[in-house]
Length: 436
Image 1: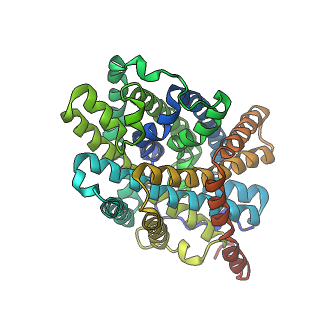
Image 2 (image 1 turned 135 degrees about the horizontal axis):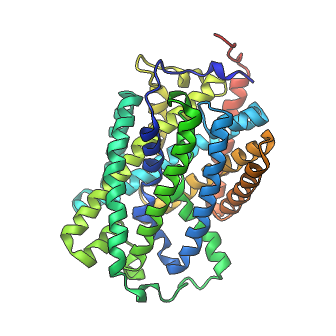
Image 3 (image 1 turned 120 degrees about the vertical axis):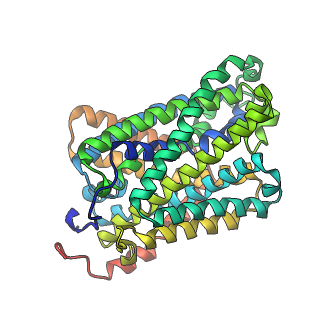
């Protein structure tokens, strides 16, 4: 293994507490809160079981990542922790899996953005080709913002996070007064047992909570990382988790299940039924801003993961190159190109089907790094209290992963195995020498 000093680092550290917290909240509050009510509609109010388990698991994971960030304040997040605990082979596998989860997640969020735009301008998403085009335009605008530099992307993230978090909380609180309890009956319209519903919904709801770890990834660009990262991780997870669960639960209580199942913009649908088309339009704009902010944050994180792995000699060296602004241009472009290809390859599905399929692949891929990071803390010999939290986080990650379904897990396994030739090729090359 190489030393952490080999990591490429920008000359300055542009990300402070607010930018780091905004990165967490902005990455978590994206497509999930606006499209998940449609994906969860077949389970009705019983989906609250999945939400409860997912939020508890997310907080356990956030606490674990907070401890890991203090123990190893290095760029790379889950990848860096696993590599330092278990070596290069495990480190590469987690870096590859986490990297896949990010660029495939970018594709899902871009699709959700298209759904939001469709609620504002229906003609723009009237056909699958148009919807895919809208998704890709948003993806590449955020790509070019990130190419301008980390500081610019961070400031943009703070603005977008403020624009979506406050209205989202207000929507959830005000809409509670208009909920029709009859929409929660039957409690479990799927007919499955409650344990089965919990198992199926945890993987879906966890999608809305993915991103809790993102402040750990660009650690080399964060000021005072030992203090800033734990605070941003826990604060961001709590804020995003409460806002997301409140809003999604309210939407289920406002829209009939049959309508909700096929809605490409369920929150806008709910707002329109209560307050009319003007407010529905406003919610659709909020959804577009939210998903746009999530795309911006994940483009940044995707490049930082490949940057850290390349700095350790496990990804091609091109990913480690920084321009004069400290921006990993190659990593940003490759992640965006792969997300683009996934959108194009899957565009023929309906919006909700496409979103659900991609999020299952992405969430499955990210749960493996979550589980491995929890195991890394257990292996590090941390304090007993932290070890108990990490053990619970590990068990939760494995439980959620098992609910992804055969198709999503099979796709995830194929994508993971696709990294094997890359690893073998990189191992034939000499590793970086410390101090060079």
